[in-house]
Image (tube, rainbow, N blue to C red; front, side, top):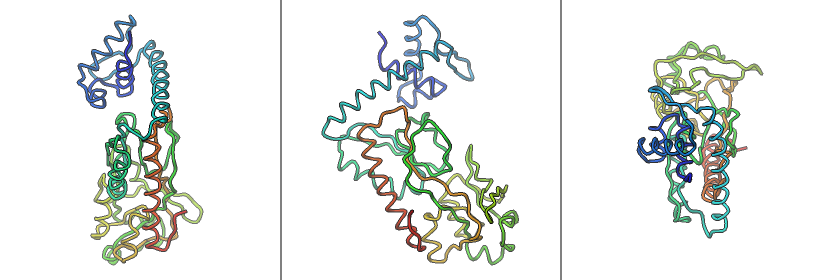
Length: 309
């Protein structure tokens, strides 16, 4: 008899690419992951995963079995969802990922209120400005602010986020002239860098032409708040979401530069795996988070005379 836990473990191992990673996500030891997969292989009489010292991959039989297991798990989740929907309130564990600043200012304060209303839930919050692999991290809901690419995830869009170039008056007083986009190449640009980041190349629109520049600078970080602090301290030019720097633009500590040049906007939204049916806890959290984030964006933009679309 094949257990549901064995199926979940096999799926996680196949998606993670290692028993160690699967074990971390499921909070079990790699040996338990290996044992469960081995039991499946013994039961089926075939090899599901090829293992080497460097990597692990599905065999042809493993790929077929994986596809069926995903369908089985989806059916089980649908059954669980139907039972939960009939229940009185959301319950269960919810794993949420969010950018650092938005997560700490808006999402983190929201979670205790969410739990006050729904005491049978628990929430794990992961904050990072780096790319978060939702499959690897077993994330149920990801709040992401980026140029969204096509993916297998469902997007609940909150808003298109305008970005601006900004710097402190002290930096601009001693810096080279800044009249057109190409002048950015002569400036110290503050860069958000992490594995897979593309923000060392800034894309913008100038006079209806899209331009991408390989900007450079002496300082980079994987934390957007650090870049803002460096800009405030006069170390260079930052490309930031308008709502994040609105308070500093309003009080003059930062100045928008190249106002006729528009950095490509990013989409702020909530993502969740489309193969997973959304349980009540996730639906409820998405509704609360969307409302709270839009309220926060509106308040910040009002500081510079803007409105949320």
